[in-house]
Image (tube, rainbow, N blue to C red):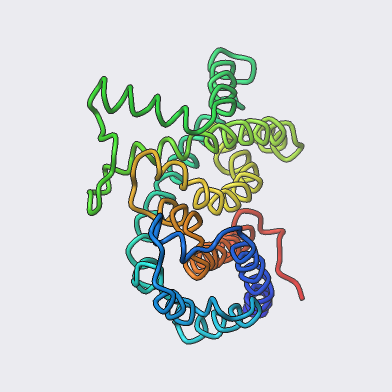
Length: 309
């Protein structure tokens, strides 16, 4: 097990290097001068402009800029934003908000999706199953910004159950409505995935054998059907965590959540290479760690899976 974890950690190094290089190159290749954009319609002082270019290493070739940035990461320096604030401070301020939002969304979609998918699979062809399929199809078909605006109008304005915007320092309960919106599409996917997996598992020999031994439905469903049906669902949920972090950009923008998505979008617009690459690097790290945890969970869900050399 220790050797497997070590190999996975070593595999993460080229992934990180490739990701940072690609993102840095894409930001570098963006048209326009990010420093000139800071001055708007005003003509900047040439000396001040040259000083800023030297300060942010924008007067250096791309490859030099990249290795200077990479060298800074290894000593914990993620650079400075164009506002003068260290990127590490921006990360420390915004990531906890987005992590809370993503975890809430993941919990909602996983718990509700698995429960509804399980019942739907066990009641195949019944009214509950048909309703779950129709609702999930509607959620998958709708763009997330439409779901967000409908949720704001119904639950925020008409019913008054939640705030339509999330201010800085707001309590975690203000994130519940954005989390429901963020989880909506993946929730529908998990319902359908769990339903299909439960139907397939219910027809396997070991389930019929369990029933023939006299085991009750209350025993067979959680131990034999649900446990074996969860492997593809857990895999999807793990990959979906990274999607949630990225997808939070739209949700955070609509609900004005002061998290990574909104800050990353603003950094892309301003062409702030260090800020964009630092945010993406941390996202990739989280994604790799979550996938490693999921791989380790496979052994708990299915003892037949072993981590061989």
